[in-house]
Image 1 (cartoon, rainbow, N blue to C red):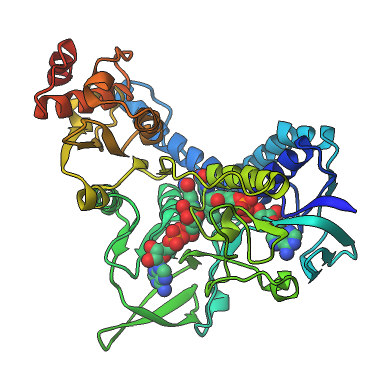
Image 2 (cartoon, helix red, strand yellow):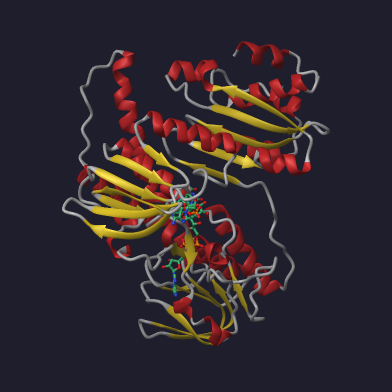
Amino acid sequence: MTDVLVIGAGPAGAIAALRAADLGARTVLVTSSAFGGMAANDGPVPVRTLAYAARLFRGARQLDQYGIAVGEPILDYSRLLARVREILGDVVAHSSLREQIDAAGVTVYEEAGNASFADPHTIVTESGLRLHAEKIIICTGGVGRRDLTPGFELTNTHSSALALTEVPSSMLVVGGGATAVQVASIFKAFGSQVHLFERGPRILSTEDADVASAVTAAFREAGMIVRENFGDIESFEKTSTGVRMNFRKDGTRDCAEAALIVMATGWVADTAKLNLPAAGVLSDHRGFVKVDPYLRTSASNIFAAGDVTGQLMLVPHAIQQGFLAASNALLGPTTRLDEGVNTSAGFTDPEYASAGMTEAKARETHDIVISTIQFDSTIRTIIDGRKVGFCKLIVDRRTAKILGCHVVGERAVEIAQVAAIAISAEMRVDDLARVPLAFPTYTGNLAYAAAAAGRQLDLQVGWAGDAASRY
Ligand SMILES: Cc1cc2nc3c(=O)[nH]c(=O)nc-3n(C[C@H](O)[C@H](O)[C@H](O)COP(=O)(O)OP(=O)(O)OC[C@H]3O[C@@H](n4cnc5c(N)ncnc54)[C@H](O)[C@@H]3O)c2cc1C
Ligand SMILES: NC(=O)c1ccc[n+]([C@@H]2O[C@H](COP(=O)([O-])OP(=O)(O)OC[C@H]3O[C@@H](n4cnc5c(N)ncnc54)[C@H](O)[C@@H]3O)[C@@H](O)[C@H]2O)c1
């Protein structure tokens, strides 16, 4: 009898299996495809690689400004895709996680096809395995939403778009979340004519409103068509040059066409194949597995972690949940999910990133001060010719502690990560302002924003205040 069986080998499943084995459990990890899951094979790694190529492309266009003549950069897309595959191989080959899992004695079944429950302690896989365990942890991730719109089969997902043999002349990206904006930004950089269609009133609806409007403005400035509130899609149909999307708004029909349509309208659970009813595991109306704060499902011996729980769908959260689910499965329900500081980021042009609360959220519960440093007024961004963007801090007026940080522009992610540390450490803005960060740096802008907030709060920021007013 196996003690712990983990289904799915993305970040949540890999960490759950490693933690279970570290706690001395006889552990089996079974996954339908390759080790690493979507995180390694289909999501962040390939997308980040293409985003990096787009960034190099932008950098190459800047060379002339600095007196370096190399001519107009030309993209060889098939060479780039070969590079993506090279990197994926490299990531897998150097994954110390896999080595640790093997060293911990976990039995791993890769490419086993979909697993499904036969009863609360037994699963069978499409490859013919039948596995029993005392405890089971479901870490099967999610999939891009598909629907019954006529002609939907003519559309693509981010995965199929990233596997194209050439850059399409035009692309219609539907959705305005993290996936859609990255796909749109990457292919815009590669030369496609891109239309981004968001059903809601704005793209990046979970980000701070200033982030969403700055990214939207920059996309438009770069020549991308961004349409919010466009209505409801009625159908897709083939045309001689690509695909047409028919939609309706307030009774009026409209359409848009492109060589390729990419749907990125949300990430849903794909739990149908798991046969959850056979194990007594309940899911919500979107298919996500219902869990309590200890990641227990409705079946007492079964836990779930990662995207399949429908909570924050990011790698660090999947890792945290995998660790917690295995700990609670073996040690009893001892650790609850920690709220923590949420960070998010998109590798678009311009980049965006956030840590902590948005301004709207903070206003619901706090009296706040806002401090924003524009990138066209700071030395490093001027040196690098990266003057689009800002660093915005949301600060609690009573305690002077940072509640949120929102950044658009070059190195946004790195700046927001430092802010996440300051928020976690509950630093006051005047303390942050006085940390003598290196000059001239992007992260320095965070300290300048902190100093400016400190001045608004009449706090003594000393020399840091002078530095902020100059840089
Ligand atoms: C385009 C894109 C870009 C992203 N970029 C980022 C980013 O930059 N940073 C970030 O933090 N997050 C990013 N994410 C989100 C991140 O990839 C996920 O949050 C993360 O992969 C979730 O990990 P997981 O272990 O829950 O699931 P997954 O990584 O999806 O792994 C699930 C595993 O379960 C297997 N499986 C599924 N069903 C079964 C079954 N029935 N039986 C057996 N095995 C099964 C799958 O094959 C897979 O191996 C991105 C997502 C997308 C779509
Ligand atoms: N860089 C990153 O960290 C990164 C990248 C990609 C995805 N992710 C994570 O993966 C998860 C899924 O992201 P996602 O972008 O795929 O989904 P999402 O749910 O975050 O966004 C979907 C978007 O599509 C819109 N939409 C829904 N139906 C629509 C329709 N019919 N027409 C037009 N627009 C429609 C929604 O209003 C929303 O803006 C998120 O939790 C995200 O954080 C992270």
